Amino acid sequence: MLLINQIKAGWNLGNSLDVYRNQPKSNNPSDYETYWGNPVIKKEIIDNVKLAGFNLIRIPVSWSEHIGDASSFLIDVNWIKRVKEVVDYAIDDNTFVIINIHHEDWLVPLKSSYEYVSDKLKKIWTQIALYFKNYDEHLFFQSMNEPRLAGTELEWTDGSEEARSVISRLNIDFVNTVRSTGGNNKLRHLILTGYCSSASENVVKDINVPDDNKILVSVHSYKPYEFSLKFDGTSKWDENNPLDISDIIQIAENLKKYFIDKNIPVIIDEFGAVNKFNTDDRINHIKYFIKTFKKINVPCIWWDNGVYSGNGERFGLIDRSSGEWYFREIAEAIVQSCV
Image 1 (tube, rainbow, N blue to C red):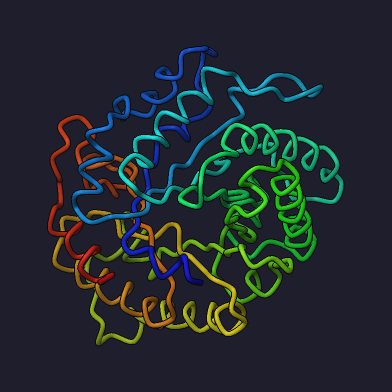
Image 2: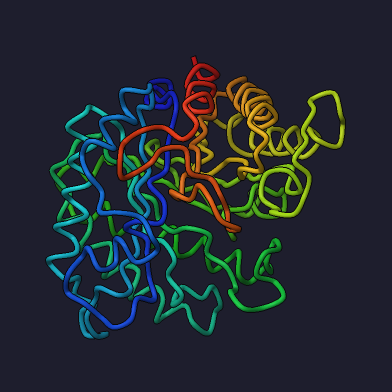
């Protein structure tokens, strides 16, 4: 909780090191880093994010394309070295950093898959933890990102009791694995998440938090969905409209009830509102959203995937080529709302 008080505004470096399904396979990290359309990450971009007032950067990382066979699941040295370079861009700016395992299709939360998934998870996290074990508390590890039953009718729901139970077991495997690697990892702040990283009551109540005072819980929130995430949904948002704020209020109540009131810190490590050429409404939504969670001491991290134009999920705030802000006023609204 003391460390959470030091965190202000957060920003995600999405769609860069978390790129996957790249064909053909390559040993060159930049082939992945640029595959979804973003340029190679430059330190100047991280510097500009810090200069804007953000002091936490989440760096999603996909590992599947960069590991060997099941005997060791050995991580390619070029890949983890590149991850370290980007982490150091932020650490050198005295910024908090989160790294995780992101977009991992093998992470199937079923009892029948548990032994394989647990083994792979532990082997990957052992290597990551050892590689970064001398970093101080500016570096957080996050167990998983949106673990779910991908490709099923339960994918973007609360999942099943079985899936939620398996995810809790995997979270404990993650904690025990990192703690066992020694160095600063004995006291590293670790972040756990539930099914699909959902903030619904069915999910958060089933997140099993071990007796460890350096554990945080994370959720994602793109609410209200019609405004924040649905591309062809509404572009209007009004805090005086009960329908626009009810989901946000409910999530805050869930987090307070199951975690904050029990002295368990929480972080919303992905939130945002897709660009529908509605900057004023996005700013109003941001101010209300952050203010609501600031009341219960929950930091919020904007999801930036670098996408500014086209028909996709346009969450990009900064041009990663030039370092100029597409939406400086939105970045300022995020930072100022966190003060």
